[in-house]
Image 1 (cartoon, helix red, strand yellow):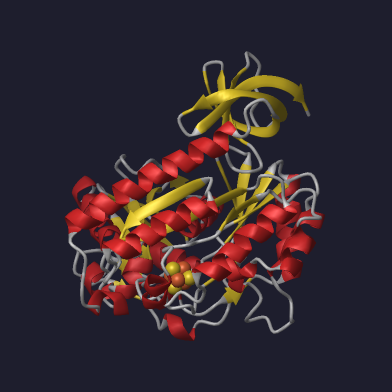
Image 2 (cartoon, helix red, strand yellow):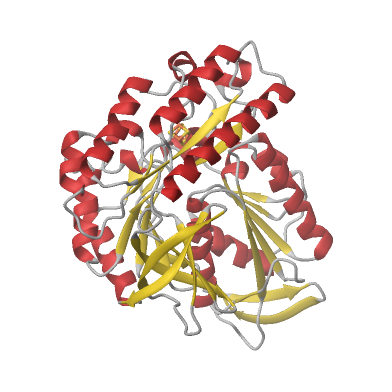
Length: 459
Ligand code: SF4
């Protein structure tokens, strides 16, 4: 590798071999938009940049290079991505700016037009960092655009697993891509086809995270229910979960969002016997009306969805069942929305994320007739949120008087917060540090969306 000249906003800084620190440090700031997968990939890039001898600074500070890891899931995410990119140039006009992620994959020309130096997509993160380093020494008048055809990407890019919230919870990305093509979603066009981390590699990563002291591992991906489809080994998500639970028996294993049809009698029988799998299942609902689900191109109806909820409650005692909901989808009538409200209540969700439908250019739903007025969407989102709050309150109340094992993450004075296996936040007081400690808490009441209680045994 040749010598590189590193630039700061004040001009050439030093020459060094690519990847080495040289005499001074190149300051790099990263801004991440969007989902847990993007956060995971940012953590992997951060770890790699540190390994290459660079230093990381908060995004608000003046840096020598900025990375913006963009999101395209809604039109608002694209707008926010553009805003952040412009902010980099304002903060430090001579800094190298590299943009990656889903928005730059779907709108590379729009991103290139913002005066950045490098435009990449959500794949090939390590090559992206190589290109960024090269641009320190060889600035070009026009941006280097490396966005490729994501639809022909077949390999899973292995990135080092990383942690969140101190050193308590780590994410392990086991899957990328999605081929479900829900009619409102741009992600299949941004992330490409399903690619899975091989089971034996997931086992090695899980063991390594447990050895590093993490007490919880979240299996994450764009659509983890599709895990294994591309591997042609006949293995399913249940095989992966069993293997990861066995590889890290001292860690809690938590599942990311599941396609509702993943939950079958066989799946429940297998995973409910795993002592360290959290009884928390996020089954994306999106609508509680069959006609709307059909227009959304979701592959289940409410009857099949309810079967999954019933199965989980048969195999687990009072599990956490959470979901996402989109209100105001094109063509959603008042009557259809009422069906969704009734179905939410029937499922008795423990927590919900509710989104007013957001048009995404390039998706079939954007071209559908009968788009719903913003004021109607907002009203429905408000009503759904009220119903969700009532359901959550009922669920929280059902734990009062019982004990829950809580993995503590953060403190404010003597107040400690952590999560129970069902993913409910639990608050307690302790003069001693509880960070990364699992302790039993006797639940005495509720506080907003949290449980409160008194500390019992510390494990
Ligand atoms: S399952 Fe549907 S909503 Fe989820 S990423 Fe795939 S296309 Fe998008």
